[in-house]
Length: 258
Length: 321
Ligand SMILES: Cc1cc2nc3c(=O)[nH]c(=O)nc-3n(C[C@H](O)[C@H](O)[C@H](O)COP(=O)(O)OP(=O)(O)OC[C@H]3O[C@@H](n4cnc5c(N)ncnc54)[C@H](O)[C@@H]3O)c2cc1C
Ligand SMILES: Nc1ncnc2c1ncn2[C@@H]1O[C@H](COP(=O)(O)O)[C@@H](O)[C@H]1O
Image 1 (cartoon, each protein chain N blue to C red):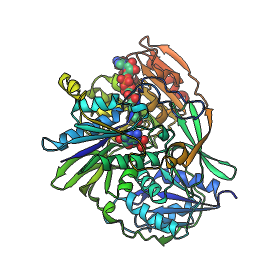
Image 2: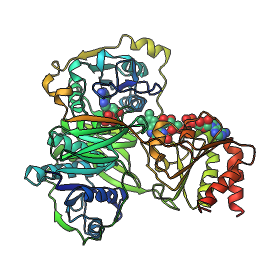
Image 3: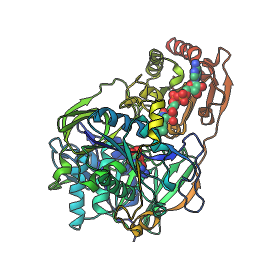
Image 4: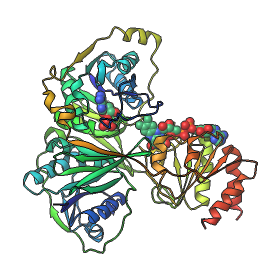
C-alpha cells in the first residue's frame, strides 16, 4: 500500500516565536524542523505501507527547506515532494491545502493520505479536511487508531464523548492525533540513507497553479492588528516547609470551596 | 450595513445540546438580529433548548445514518448558500465536527476560515476575529477581505452561555444532497466513556496532574483530591500521551478549555499550550518543585515543593474536615 504523508516543517517550538513586523505573520526564516505532530503520521504510514508499499512525503515550506523532510526520510519514508516558492508567502490554510493537493497528485498513485490533526505552529486544524475536499476524497479526522482491512481503512475517531468506530473505503485521507503510534527514532543507517533519497522540489508554476492566486495575493483574510493581551498577574510563591498544604486549605476555605 | 444574520453549528450528544453551541448562540445573539442553527441530525429533541438560547430556526438534515457530519453538513450548507439563503457569518465550535464542517465548506465556497477565535468584534460593519498567539500573551485581529459568509471556528469557553427565553426554534429540513465519493466514510459504532462526577469543562474545581507525578499510579492522588473538592480531575498532554489517563482528561490547546473557580496544577510545567487551556480560571494554585516553572507566572498561590509530599498532606487535611 502506498501512503502519502503531509509533513510540515516549522520553527523549533522551543525557540521563542516572533512575528514579522510588516506582515504580522509568524517568522519562518530560520532553520525549520519536522513538526512533532507529523512524526506520528510518518510512523503510522511506515507501519501501514509495510514492505510492499512506499511512503511519500509532501511539504510546503519556504527557502527550499529540507531539514524536516530529511528527518522523516531517515525514519524510513522513500521520497518527498517539496513545494517552495516565494509566491507562497502569506498563504492561508485554504491555499496551503490547494497547493498540497497538487503536490499529492504529483507524488504518484496512493491509497491513503495521512496528516496530523493540527500543526504545532499554525494549529488551524482545517488543512487535512480541506485537502480531502479539494481531492474529492472521503476522510476521517482525529484518528487515535488506524488499521487497514483490504480496501477499507478502519479508524477509531476521537469524539467529545469517547470515540467512534469509522470505516472508509480507500483512497481516503486520515488525520491522526498524537499518540496514535510511538514514532521511531531515526537510526544512524537511516540518517545516512536519507541523504541520498529523492526530494522533488517544485514551484507553484510546476504544479500548474497561478502565482496570483496563492500567498498574500490569494489570501482571503488579513491581519489588521496585533495587540498585547491582558496579562495575568503572578501571585504569591512560597517554598514548602512541610506545612504549605495548610496555605492551600486556607485559600480554598477563603473561597468557600471547603 | 452591520451583521444581520448568523448561523451557528449546533452539536448535541444524546439529546443534550453541547455547551459550546450555547456559548456561540449567546455571542451570535449579541451581534446579529437573526440567529439560526444548522444541525446534522434530527433536531426535534433539541429545538426547545436552541430556541431558549436565541435561535429562531434550526435547519436540520435529519438522521445522517452513520455519515459524518462534516461532509454531510458542508454539502447541505453549500447548496443552501448557493441557492441564495446565505448568512453574514457562520459560527462553529473548535470541535471535531466543527473543524470538519468548516474545512469542507471552505473549499466548497472557496472562502477561508478564521480559526482559534476567542472573541469577535465589529469593525466597519464587518466581523473581525480575535485569536490569541504565543500562549495568549498577544491577540491577533483578522478580517475577511471579501468572502461571504464569513466562517469562524471559535474556541470553547470564549463566551458564557445564557438563556434568552425564546420559544422553541422552528425546525426546517435541510437537504444534504449527493455527497459523492467524499461521503463514503461511515460510523459503525459509538463508544461513550463513562465518567462519574462533574464534567471537566463544567466543574467549579479542577485538579490537574502532569508528568511531575512521576508515575501513572500516583494519578490516584489527583482523582482523590478532585473528589474531595467536588471537582473534576484533569491532565497535561504529557501524561495523556503517556497513556496514564484518557484524552478526555486533557486540558490545553488540543484538549479542553476550562474556566473553573479554582484550578490546581500539580507537577505541571505550564507550557504555553497548557496555559491557553486554563489561564482563564478564576483562581490558580500550582505545586511544582522547580521555582522557575512557567506555571508560577499565572498562579495566585504557588508552592515550590514536591507533589509527593504536598498532595497527600492536603488530601488528608481535606478528608479530615
Ligand atoms: C501542537 C501542540 C499542542 C499541545 N497541546 C497541549 C495541550 O492541549 N495540553 C497540554 O497540557 N500540553 C499540550 N502540549 C504539550 C506541551 O507543550 C507540554 O509538553 C506539556 O504540557 C507538558 O506536560 P507536563 O507539564 O505534565 O510535563 P513537563 O513539561 O515534563 O513538566 C513536568 C513538571 O513537573 C515538575 N516536577 C517534576 N517532579 C516533581 C515533583 N516530584 N513534585 C513537583 N513537581 C515536579 C517539573 O519541575 C516540571 O515543571 C502541546 C504541544 C504541542 C506541540
Ligand atoms: N505547509 C504544510 N506542509 C505540509 N503539510 C502541512 C502544511 N500545513 C499543514 N499541513 C498538514 O496539515 C496538518 C494540519 O495543519 P493545520 O491545519 O495548519 O493545523 C499538519 O499537521 C500537516 O500534517
